[in-house]
Length: 100
Image (tube, rainbow, N blue to C red):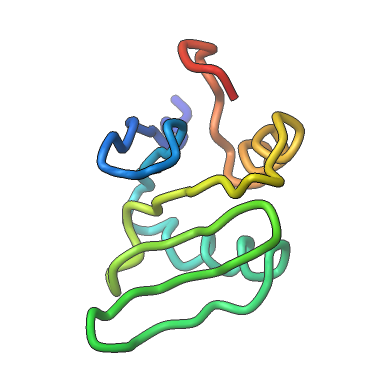
């Protein structure tokens, strides 16, 4: 039996209405951050709040030092295609319940 992929939930406390938190199995977290770093840029970690973050032109990827869940914030340049690419990269299957 295959293991389920990541899940997500809407993050209503963010200014962007389509911000989500993606939850991964604990053993996947390091690999996921490595993939995100390869695709979207350098991972910055630390600071007074212990935040992990990758900033790209289209997405901001953020988590606390545990790395999970990953909050995905879409910038104004982000398109549906960008979200679909992210989903392919992390193995998320969109149920279509929300607009990308």
